[in-house]
Image (cartoon, rainbow, N blue to C red; front, side):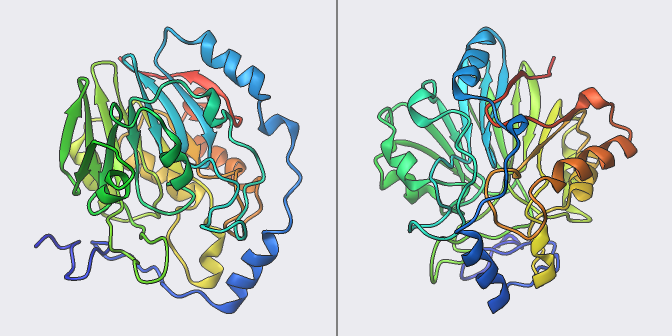
Length: 321
């Protein structure tokens, strides 16, 4: 049995210290935050009309659009990939709890036809059940998920669901998807913690090579191993927010500095900061992550044009071959 498998589900391996219990003060803060939102600068969001126009402006190119959090719209070789779809107001099964303070950059009704859905794990801010249920072309969409998450989609009548273990790969439309390790956890309710796997993804096509982390903290070994397997990535999309919960003994999300280290270790030519500026899940200031990320990336030798910080709804051309 692989070392990240257990008789009851899955675990992080190699082990990274990540205390799994959260105290009363954490839940109290999260409850209070559900009733307030930070002041959002206008520079953080594109008007949706402008976002739609910008997406159409690049319709003949390979592109990436930040919807918010870890939700990205990637257009690659004529196919549309949607990562970790999250469009709901709350990251919760109920209309209470962590609440997003910015709307999605593109609303579901303004999305292009989705060809591929790519999911890193099953947390509510990465996998939106109502959105998944709402899509009307389920027979045509190919879904890539980590192990034991397949039934989430087949129960909603998706036909083409590919569940992969770490380092397994599968191709569709001449695009290869490789599931890779991360340091995180899974669970959507009581009793299902770590019953399904979590992963990051390598996306490889004739046009370029890309890395989508989904969600992870730093590991002193995992990302070096990924760097040995892949010569380089043209762009890595790395988590830079939700590290403030370390004050409660929780280490499941990278700091901005660790995100840059991850990028260096996997041989990423350019870095995009994701998983910030969307929803209050942690105790760091909402506008702190991009400042620390940019500073750390420059210090590590990345040129300004290779440090990608998007507005919600922004589209850019993908780097590549």
